[in-house]
Length: 390
Ligand code: GDP
Ligand code: MN
Image 1 (tube, protein in one colour):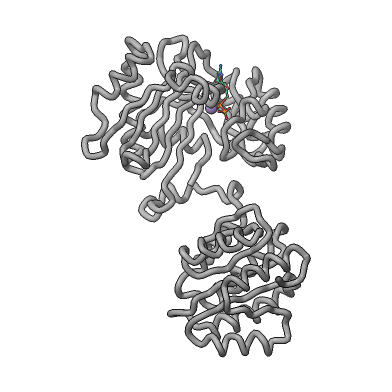
Image 2: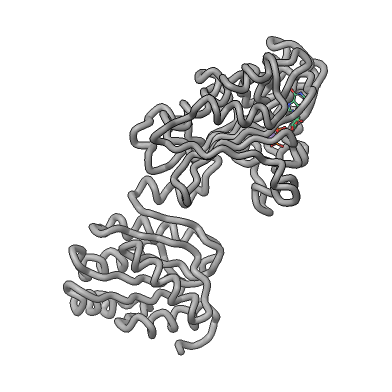
């Protein structure tokens, strides 16, 4: 799960990382008042769950509360397109107002989990700021790394290696040590998958301060961090994914045209491969789980039909604990209730499959029952391409 910059900054500050005291605002009035309270100059920053805002016009330096209002009016409701938002961009619903600081140097500091080694990696570069992606690609040697074995933890030598590599001394080196320790404590205590300070600025006072912060959490650990889960912003998420989560469905939106409803992650993967091998493209990954009920089937259909890209639906279910007749009734009820007009191919095997077939056939709806997986997949690909069943 991602959170906003102002939330990340507040969290990091609680772990001893200096972040500059920004405030979240939702209206132009609040922006003006915050700028007046914090003092000018200040920065008005679009809060979206994506980086690259600076180059897209999402970060504005203002000299008066009036200018803060004007910047807020321009940004709120606007769509920002950055390399991280995808071509559709993201709509700005909130801003952060923070006192502007005089920046002498911009560093990059990142902490993430390395899946290969199982270690936490602490990275730092003296070439931080908005060009860090180019630096990573063209001169990766400028990014210094320390592997931290989680059984040993963050040690002073990790910190010294990096701060020396960055050329830090005096207060800046001391600040860096505190920042690295705070980041590591936050990372491990809150089950983060990424913490990024870019830039970590060296101010004219010689002290370090993060003027951008990104923190991402491991979704599978959120159940034990209610405070973090409460930071979720539904406006930043795919509404279909959020709805699926509420209904206990595992759903991931993809870019194809064939909606899939499958039980079990393994079968869902095999189904997507099968569609792909017959020349189709799955519109989603959807696992309704082992104990899917008629309500879950309806919830799944509702989500699938909301996707405008979808040209057909493919149901592939193995009835083990789940009975095929119950599922068929659920499919028929959902199709009737939602007025389904898209081609629908159902492949079911297992408990009460014959009864399931009878229910679908007697429904009077145009649903193609095909127990052979290969034929079923080929049929839905043909139907969504506007052709006849192959
Ligand atoms: P990003 O483009 O989404 O990563 O947004 P950032 O928060 O990193 O802001 C973009 C750039 O704006 C930073 O790299 C800084 O150079 C600049 N910036 C942001 N806040 C301040 C500030 O308070 N003072 C100064 N001088 N520059 C700032
Ligand atoms: Mn940044």
